[in-house]
Amino acid sequence: MLGTDVSTIKKKLIVRNTRHEDIEGIIKMNKLGFGNEAIAFKREHFESQLKIFPEGQICIEYDGVIVGSCSSIIVNFDEYGEDHSFDEIADEGFIRNHNPAGKNLYGIEVVVHPEYRQMKIGRRLYEARRKICKKFNLESILFGGRLPNYHKYGDQISADEYTNEVINRNLYDPVLTFQLMNGFKLHKVMANYLPDDHASLKYATLMEWRNPEYVPVITEKYKRALPIRISAIQYPMKAIQSFKDFASQSEYYIDASSKVRSDFVVFPELFTIQLLSFIKKTAPNKQVREVAAYTKDYLQLFSEMAIRYSINIIAGSQFVIEKGSLYNVAYLFHRNGRIDEQYKLHISQDERKWWGTQAGNGVKVFDTDCGKVSILIGYDIQFPELARIAVNQGTQLIFIPFTAQDQQANLRIRCCARARAIENQVATITAGTVGNLTHVYHMNTNYAQSGIFMPIDYGSTDDGIIGEAAVNTETMVIGEVDLEAIRQNRLIGTVTPLKDRRDDLYQVKSLGEQLSFVNS
Image (cartoon, rainbow, N blue to C red):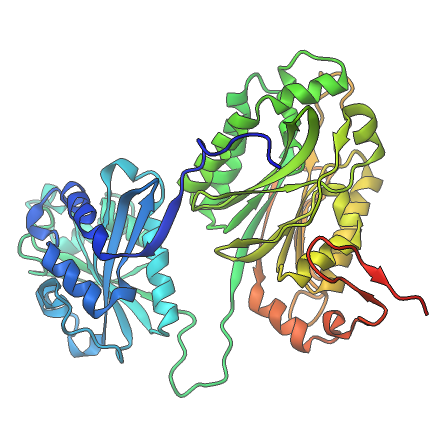
């Protein structure tokens, strides 16, 4: 149903296990990434790694090109000690010493293509390693990190002094600084770690990240937490001069959300109306069609930012024209490059009267790297049937981009979002606009109090509010939703409305079908 062709915009970024056919591309990338062929793995190393521990070898493919890769091995680190060399612990890169019964994941190589180093490729590789660590219930991740800038200071200070200066942010090292920013801790500096690493003067840092979900094998009854971090943007509608200004304002919030490592960032419904700041139309139906003309630019912008900042973006909603008709469409830009859309299903009187907006059909449930999610745009959250349909299909998070012109309209959204969270035992997230475009003809005022809500029960906060913005303030609400807590609440909550509902009285049969009622 989507009217704009996104085939030229979509660029897939895929994090996956390395395959044999990737080896040649990885070898070429490694030569560029390291700048030193002597320390890069060769084909025989990769073939051995894939044969022995395929689950530990990861690559990132962007638009068909390998742009990053990492290799790992499982060991019992105690058997090697803190004064090991690379060849000892990595079996010279062949990993024939891989121990499936070991307690530690040891990283033996990470490389990012130089032309793609502003796209959070390294962070994604580290996240992939964390997932491996958790999957195999390993105690920690360790590795010997290079010090590629140390050769500039080796005749002035010791390697220990150099690492302390980097830790204190007095010096910059591209590898160590990045590892510290990604939650790894320094154990010690190791000498003679990698003989051919001349830039590091053969030194390396022993780094470790401890798995917070590690369960000793004697512990059997344990459920892992599955926290999802979310940023809801209470977006300011203020005058801008160009689409570039809109892009800059949007990127500010995406960058801020990425810095706190949010998995999702949510913008409000039709926040793209801000573009009317520089569109000189006065008739409402013509105004919104001018905004719709920027749909391709909008798609390009948020698709690129989702990949570059490694964050899933619910980019509010945008007007789309299809076969002459106007629709209000919400987009989900996945951090791997995929784009999904949800049409607004219920159109208010003002939207029909002034803009001629048409209704879409069907609630969608989207698979993401953080579970199943749905989007209900503004007015749609006031219809409980839609949330129930989505939850029946597995939705765990419902995002609600909205716009409201006064306190009453905002409270309707807020109260319904909280009700949907309680009755469906699901998390709901609202994001609204604030501020006013006073120079634009016939624009509504904006009023919002955005928030992140959970069922009210002991497994959540006392009032079910994970986070909530101050009223009518330009801000960003950040909160964590634990998917495991939602699952537990549905099973053993104080009340369990999903289990206790009377299907003999009312029932959602399948996705897209309306509720059927049984007369008593």
